[in-house]
Length: 320
Image: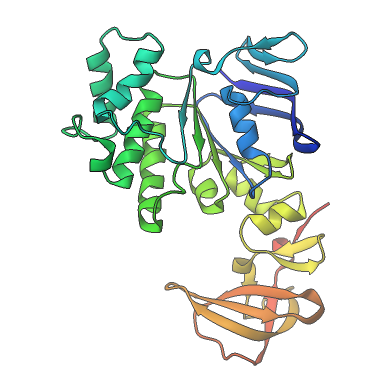
């Protein structure tokens, strides 16, 4: 069942955390709320979870309203049948892996065949043999798996992820990102994921919701968000953008060529820095009135020299 949000809004004192918002989280899809700190993504997640009370609006799961300001409906968090994975894992330090995972089942009264249900969750996240360990005896990645198993053992309608990988180091974060999306797809879950990391959003999501200052700016598949941003902020926040006309037309670095083809437009800049990325060089150029551009090259370019760059008309994206 889809989760449908209509006119949801929230203020803290005089600060508008979320302007009136409509959103549909589609069943079986991995949807990501993406934006900088303070954009309202965590506030929206917490209102869906039942951890914050909206000022106005409605939240429905299928045909059931779980929140409605107009109808005075506010289903408590523990009755919304949602799983949640927190940023700090929130594992009980005095409980074993088994008991941490079983906690949600006990709290919701789903204790029939409890041992079998927990063992299935343990096996799903590949923690077999660690059932008797305590959180302090696990690595960060293993703790993350326990938190995920605890969230899915109750077979929730929706799993909410609040920046669950931000506490991990860079290498483990990359590893867990791939593992997490694999687990979500294997189980067939509906997921809502909050992050400020565009790499996480682009690589994991079926659909991305880009937010800024309490508003949704664009919703779409990663390829569409990247290739056809509808707002200057989206173009700047997702990937790198080179502006041909301020806030109106831009080109991505990978679409800039050092060799002219028929019909290409030519631009001239001064090379300011060159960074080696392993498979290519990232070149920063001063383009005068156009500001700073980023381009990619297969060879190291001499700093301080002028260079001509070429852009095909079909790669120029105009924001209306």
